[in-house]
Image 1 (cartoon, rainbow, N blue to C red):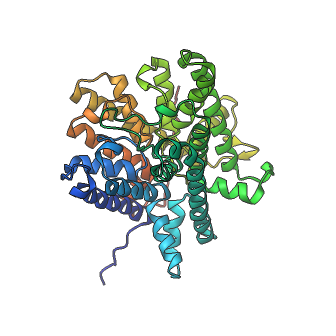
Image 2 (image 1 turned 45 degrees about the vertical axis):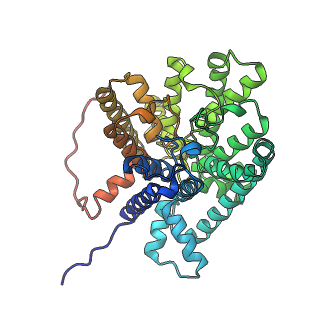
Image 3 (image 1 turned 135 degrees about the vertical axis):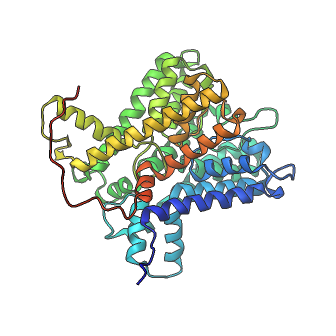
Length: 441
């Protein structure tokens, strides 16, 4: 009897994202999607759809001045689907229709939002969807005084678009003009309300759904939090505060004191895969660009709207290194032992991201004849699904744009997800090889 072929949960996630990107690209190619009513070239439409679905924010066409209202609506829908995840959106429709969720579907939902177990996954998915809509609507209401003051009734739609884009860590904006493209939020660098709202949306969207669940369940009782939630919150605080202090003293000294605080904080937050900017990134020093690259590669947290290697990967690697320095037999965090498989996965993820990030930059630099440092910034932004740019992306050739598309896709679905999808059905074997010592370091 012929064995029935079944897709693994990882293959479903991969194919789901790929399908959404291709459908989005087709819709963006339609004449109705551009302001000029012309057919957008496939490579431009594909790049935009991939950037939106992978919540990156890198663009080859200015979102506000090139795309029509229909095109911008398609981009917004792709951002929302990419932020929540294809599987989560599909589960939402299933829940609304009253259908029962099978065990296979629950397993897929578990992988999609990085939940520790399938038990309670339907309840957790419903909570994720409700909280997402709540924060996006709350953010839109908070942004309305700013945008309605400057754009009138159009400000309502701008508020909603930027709220969804910020919460999903996408970085797309609608503030460019034909004469001033790719401006992002630079015109609002001194506006406290916009800065605070956008930063909070980025942080809330990037800390992960499981952390929300911990906060909701345990509130101020931090000792009851999962080890992962503690690691996420501690790492997020350190990765925002320390870079902000550096930016304040070394990168933003030419700004007035009040504006200096907002710009420093905003750049520290937006590197966590958000993609908005309120300062001229081309003016950064070499050290500043290096810090941006590190923060973009780390990214947000597991099971969130953010990309990157994830804060927990960095924390586990740090804990593992510390255990070696202290000659401990295992990595420890917050009075708990870290599982050995988590350490191995963290090492694999780090090496995978490092290889793709460096390899992509070297190829782009060789093909385009651009400085390696600037190309490293673009590839870190792509694989970290950040969207910050030094202005190189719009002028890149087809091969280089293709590399960035692949990096964005890998950064959103996760490197291990792709590997597990490719190796589905492989038998790891039931035996172990003889052990032998090797000297390292």
